[in-house]
Image (cartoon, rainbow, N blue to C red; front, side, top):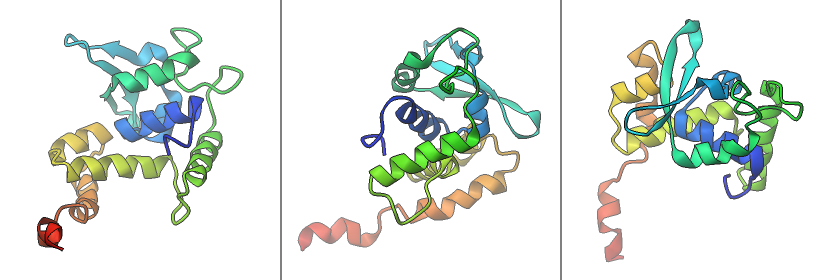
Amino acid sequence: MLEASEGKTRAMILLLATTGLRISEALDARWSDTYQDPLGNAGLRVVGKGGKARSVKVLPAVVEALRPFRASQDGYLLPNASGERMSHQSADQAISRAAARAGITDRRVSAHWLRHFLATQALAAGAPLLQVQQDLGHAALATTQRYLHAAKGLEKTSADYVKGLL
């Protein structure tokens, strides 16, 4: 999808797929919500479900992808053409078009799908369940545990270790 997208759509996909933000959190985010921690890592303060605030790490490549759309310190990370908040519908349409261009036609790809992607990939790569819970802003660990089933499907099986014999 990243190769099939550019500009703001590419920046949005990067942001969602690497932070696990809900679409409303990403669209509400402003440059004034960003910060740099003492180690030099970029972060973003967001307010999620139930008014709960949390911070997420933002990778340098994501910051660079977002930078061309920065109009002011208080501007939106992902503004619409007039600099206002992008609509949920516009964001989902842009993501769906990027998925279609990438040839992903067997499922409906949305901003929420990118959130699932991050959680599943992180857990499959060995991220601690509590870290993923915190990053996604889940109130209950049981909500995060639902991603474990999909992550288990991505793990190696015995056959993966012997496939070189064939």
